[in-house]
Image 1 (cartoon, one colour):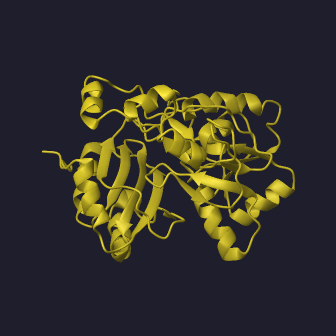
Image 2: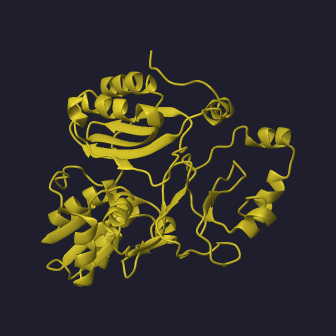
Length: 334
């Protein structure tokens, strides 16, 4: 029988909030052929749950995509555990910027057809034929030399942080974004192209996709924005990325610079905080300032605020039989 945690979110939060230690947020991915993804998933769950790991991990025949946190005292044990799996040995970790990575409260490892859905025929291009990986300094230098910069994240991510002058497709899914990027780069196959995203996984697929379509000089930011921040701090470099970095966990975002690039979707005042509507039947994602958050009780609209203000018993009754179109809670209001 498949192992999984059956406790409710409320019960799990009580356990996590009572912890007397910090957690380190980690993300990593690897494109690698996994013949028996089900067995691989089960082996990971058994090993990682024993170390107190919490997170959301996707496993497929094409590899693994992981966002998680681990008790800081078990960090070295977790590194050794990951390396004990031949398919994952020496996989680079992207360590979160926050000191305490209270980003998840449950360990969820799911089998998926693909670790990153792109809507393409996977015989269409070679996902292992990727572009060059650039360090933060190399990426900065290439920007200074006039390279074309492309943001491979969704619009609500680039709204609150981005590299100046980057092409930022107005898409809310990676699947929609790929053809938009191809169109935006029309006539630039011989130019130097720089790709960046949160941790690197979207750039990995995009670089292979662009190379398949005849682009000759495709490059990607090694370790994504997460590692870029670590590198510029460590080496004393200028941050050409401005604003905050959206992350797909309970922290919602990490600060790279203090620049506020986004605006509240409700009052249009400067804001950089992504939140989900507090009406759980909606849960739409929006950028909301503190004043609107207080005024609207965290809701995205007057209609949702009316529901939020109802007694919880009434809200529970209304939720029965209601299924959100996007169960990940990242439908976007813009």
